[in-house]
Picture (cartoon, rainbow, N blue to C red):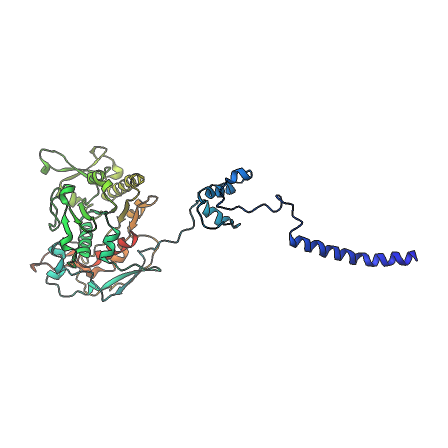
Length: 446
């Protein structure tokens, strides 16, 4: 009998063990087997009214950072339990989140657009130099006015004058550079005022920056530049002529015609004097860096306050590169003092002289828009010097080189006011024209 009972128990024991295991599993899922405070700690809540540091010792630095955020979140709506996701916690702790990739405006395509141009050249005589106002010349083809740039993979908002002025309320936009920078300035003035709606709203404030009235002179006189303010929004748009971005100082103050010291290691004095008044700064240089220009202007390269004897920066392109890097480095060091200032370095505007140079019969007679292509797709700038100068700084590269290279039909070319034969201008652009796109890209980034 005992043998039989023993055999039965041995047969039933696995069944009892199975039932007990099921019971334990049920209790585990119900949660009653957790030891309070050890296996199931209370979840962190951001908007507690008492300090988390008084509740439990904080050892993990990640939890510490969440606690610090909790102190600042006491006014948050309902209690928010921390999700156990390290990325979410890091973002809440104040570390920079993953940002959406910025639009790369240099890549894209030119498309025909019947809403172009953005303004009328003949109606912009107040702001636009005659020689750049191609509707006033004997030119008869204006297809170059009818194209808009579309960035690759992102949209560029249509430029709206009233909206832009509201965004720039109580702000100053400054263009500092050579005659191509001046074209960009005149383009912006026409985009803002040529409709006539804001024409009476504009006042000349050049005297506040010690500037002479030079907006129509082809080579501005000293002091160099123009400045205008839109009264309704207190928006100022100015241009300062600094073709090399070097500080120029008369070799003899009593006789400026004797020549100028061109300080390679000093930014223009205008910037030092007025940087605190600016909110948007667009700089450019490039085409004046040649021996002919320096000789014609009686400029002598200086470094460290004396004539340059450093062979490392004796050549034109090395001197230019040295200057651009120096100016960008100086501006980058100033930006923490002026957190609302946005600085752009505009890349080189391409020349289109074919079959010679400007003084050896070079021409740009093409009238066929986009004859060499419509699209740009590259991962670097064609202006390597400009791209290298802004690298590692908070200054943005306004990269217009490649997209402008496709527009050789948009230059002044052989056309002039008096229809006199002579040197073709394959450097400057007809306005309205390509520089309007540069300003659209600028506006999209502000």
